[in-house]
Image: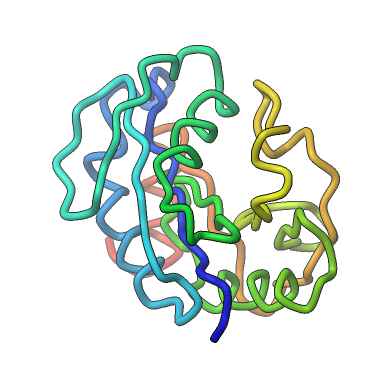
Length: 178
């Protein structure tokens, strides 16, 4: 039996650059992609600035304003004791590939590192897997401060990063959804 792996979807931010709660538009599609990954056994969504309706288990992080590390620690704390690793996913990455999730989890299972991240064109990206051994060491700046083993996911496409309405419009144009 494989070790249990859970997903922590970070959706706590204020969305100030977007101008409204972007999570209301992006969370459901991101969750759909996480659910398509065969390596995920549980999902928790971390909310903070906005209450967002979701069909996933959600927790509110009272310290979300301290940064992504605070939100991530809230999510990790909410995972069941059986979870041996967490896949960190951002709620504003609507093009997340389920295969990228499975690829980084497989690298973690192979023992590459306690921190494994997808890379695109050689640049670190998401998703990121964190083995339970390092959960207590997540700093306020979040998993970005932890040195990962990189797993190339160029062939799967970057998950994207929607920060403004123009970013979302660009994503719609790229996917032909206009």
